Length: 554
Image (cartoon, rainbow, N blue to C red):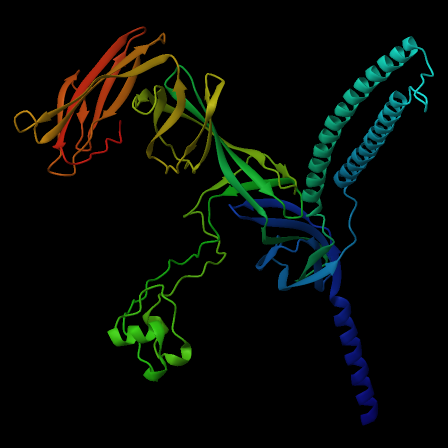
């Protein structure tokens, strides 16, 4: 009886174990990338999958996860809160390379280029042989004994034919060389493009296996997110200004990615967060200085012995002494440096630009322009000029930023739909005033002349003990625009940093609006259409005759 019960219990346990194994069903799913948040040097990718799950425990396997993910960043969640997430594991596996139509197209083009190169090479060889034959024909116009086989007329006709044919053949050779050079360049570009795409066409992937427990059979939504390297973005701005006192800023993000997976029809966000920085501020530690104490002073030699005899402390950055000859606390000479880790910042310390429409960014290493926002600013327009350095008037807009931060980046400048150049802009916080330079304007003429350049002596009678330099400058500004413009014009005079050097500002016409202690003279000019204005100023520099004074600003 006991034996029968024992057999029955074993059989029941085996049935339970079998049921448990069946409950842990493994489901391989093909997920779709639904959203990506791009940072400056990486991206947060979110994959979605809808899975038919039976009651109990199942293992859902997300296929073809790229290798270059941050394993510690993996997160999984269920759209249905009843679905219990039990665990997450990562496995690496080989996979057959899927057919890539873009690579196949490039391979075909490369083969065509290679075939064309072979044809060109054959043509070059044919021309070379033809030229050899013509040269041989030219040299064999006479018999071995020196007697002509042809008449003089026939020889002349033959030589004329040979020369013309040689010239024509040489021209064809040059054309073939140029064509070969172009073909080689095309082939190089095709190969570079193919290599760029092939980097992401890898045959080794990771599988993310998620263990879940479902209370009932049905379809469940699962999300898997991870941080992946090989992606980034940078801001670019198109700035447009016209006759009105407004400036239009078109924000764009140049997104680049070579992660090994294409982002097709995704919800895209661009973030200013810096995950490569530690989320916790580094803390300073006390910096102690002390002399080294040695176990055996007799073993110390050379520079170390000198330091020991003179009791000189170890200077920061010097090479450490051998560990066996020193006894010290390492904390006394170095602070504790924070180690950067990938901690995602929250919205409070960064900005997310969520793109309104869905985007597609292939894994091809090429920059793709993504529109972010369009802002229109009321601006105070004026011109700025520094004639000593440049005879151009620079168009400038004084703007107060709105709620959207302006990140440091490249400016493409347009004036009334005409591209005038590019510039750089620094980071501008919301609500902060800033200046944007919008290029030069040839309609404002600026000319700077030196009117006086004298040198004399002062002090003692006749010879004098000091040298005196007199300088006078004239700046002529004229407005050829059809509207009145405001121009801030800046000049400078030298500033003495030695009591023996005397600098004196002479006559200035008109009086500058500002005369700073750094020697800058500034005028706020208002020029009507066609109006011309002149500025003159002079200064003197006096210093001992036996000294040499370089006037670098001249």
